[in-house]
Length: 62
Image (cartoon, rainbow, N blue to C red; front, top):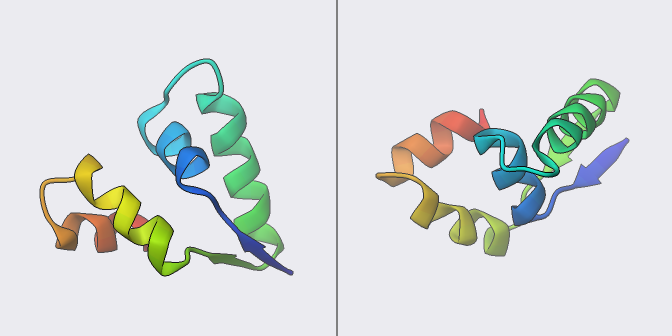
């Protein structure tokens, strides 16, 4: 299965933002375990301000 993920879900899951951080992490794990997690170019660009540089974005998404 392929799951496209939105920026808000990634930020909640990665940074533990409440009130949805735990649920976002759990759902990301389920999606990852079920197949491919897709991050489109727009979501990738929206993540950039949350990190110091692009290599950290890439490393986190791996």
